[in-house]
Amino acid sequence: MTDRRLGWLLLAPALLLLGGLTVYPAIWVIWLSLQYRVPVFGIARWAGAAHYAFLTVDSRFWNAAGVTALFTVASVALESILGLAMALALRGQQRGRRVAVALLLLAWALPSVVTAKMFEWLYHPSGGLVNFLLGGRAVNWLGDPALALPSLVLADVWRTTPFVALLCYARLLTIPAELYEAAEVDGAAGVQAFARITWPLVRPILLVALLFRIEIGIICRNTKGKRAIFRWVAGK
Image (cartoon, rainbow, N blue to C red; front, side, top):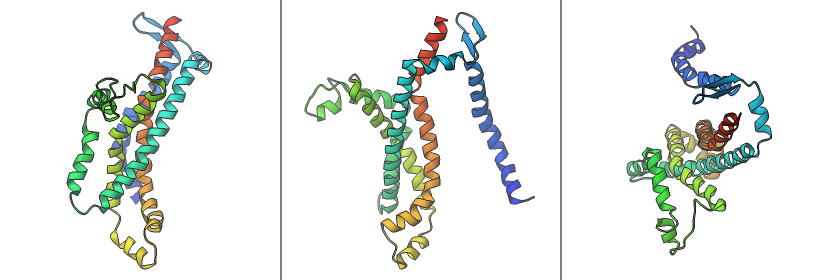
């Protein structure tokens, strides 16, 4: 048996599990999207592509799609930059590295509902800590249309940047020190060592982290689109 076949054999259980958890639900959702279904009223009939035709002219859907794209791009970009910077800082830290990793994990380990309530308190217009630090200004961070999305992006970045940082940090620990020593002998250090050694080796792991974050970001921001579809189907 070749190494390639052995690799596929070892991956088969994980692929089957992931297929059952992702591929089957995706196919089922596509099947449901081709039907009119309102379980509360017992309505179920074939719709075909009518739902998709409706979405092309529904302003609420395009508004939700635009907000989703903006939220995802902004949060993922910030998480990638800050996560990689934190990973590099951790690798270069000489003392207290375990404490730093533990503190970094704290934000990621908190349940989502706890994080949401915490930032709700931080952003509170009258008693929030953010407004207190700004000198007692009554800024409605979550009620102002111009401030709500940036506020949510910052909350998401605070919670999920440790995920990206830890993945990058784990990859950095596997890079042999001999590579940097050889590069330094050849005159490549600092930015050149990062561009020619660190970045090419970290990039695949960073890509995996980005794929996870993009998917979660889209899920976190698709509520409006779902509500628009449900209201239209129920109205039928």
